[in-house]
Image (cartoon, rainbow, N blue to C red; front, top):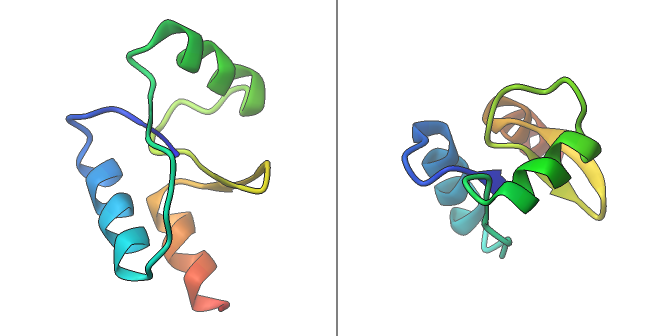
Length: 71
């Protein structure tokens, strides 16, 4: 999950994943390499968090909520 430490929606996404017992990698886009990596994986996306599972983009926080509704 690509995040930024002060991002409210990132914190909510982390809490949601933790409540489901799902581990994640917190990739802070303040790191230039990770920010460039995100731009390659999700060109044109300007919001965070950006959540991926098995290399496939789920999306942001609201997309994550929807993802779990289908499970």
